Image (tube, rainbow, N blue to C red; front, side, top):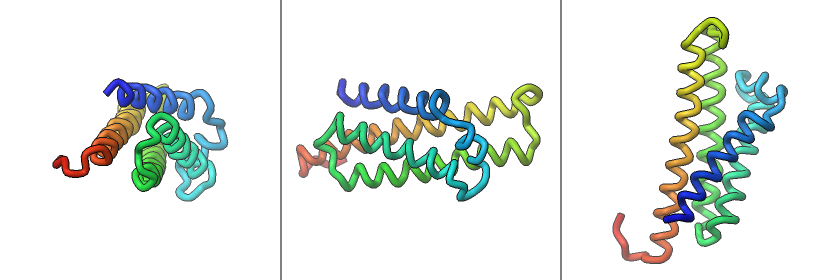
Length: 137
């Protein structure tokens, strides 16, 4: 169980670094344009790093599960960011004028954190089923 807690902590740290510290303007300025490389690259880096972290920390997880997590995290991250950017734009919400901007930013971050909790749950089930194939979940 301790390894899964570390996985969650590392995924949260990864999220902070990639979403706030190392995200260049090219990415955050263009996440609201559907299909723009800035948003695709941003979400792809998130998904790739999650794949790498799981592969390194929990090599007993199956490649199928890791690839499924990669695809789902990419889609969830991309659509969450794209939606947030467009709702803010359509509503005209501004960080300095509208509390709704911050409510939506909080919702965006909640969705990302719940995604990581889901990822840890899937990995937990995967490694336990691999050890005990007859176990019912």
